[in-house]
Length: 197
Image: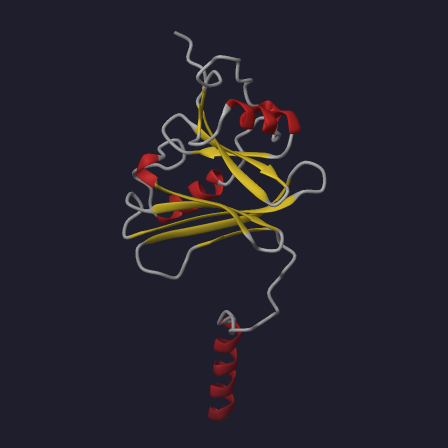
């Protein structure tokens, strides 16, 4: 009777213990297109990944992650990959420098939510023709600061091609915009909303 009771207790404990993932375990659900998970490290860490179906049949993977000793000092990285895993764009920021996306008082849970929001496309229309036109003889388009090396001709080529556009917060008021052409990603610059003075 005593052995039967111990056996039942062991069986009950085993049933209540969550399964542990084994290295090389292929039983995980591979059909999901979004993942939000903390990294198993000390400090404040979060990561998020999702599929992005851009214009036509162009598909990309958007990844965002943050790591730091504390949440306010975390370093956040935005990455765009091709469907086969090639890194097309990779840019890192201190979370304190991007208050449009990250709360300086966030904890681990808040950072996870903010990383997910940061990986959302802020472009109202996700094609490059949505960006403001760059007038001839102007230093830059209205409300837009071109990235280093982006000329008016290059910028207008992206707008004219109407290819995929992914924008995300990169400061207190601005959104970095990345133009896509097949398996090439180009940081076009930062869009800042017009101010009514």
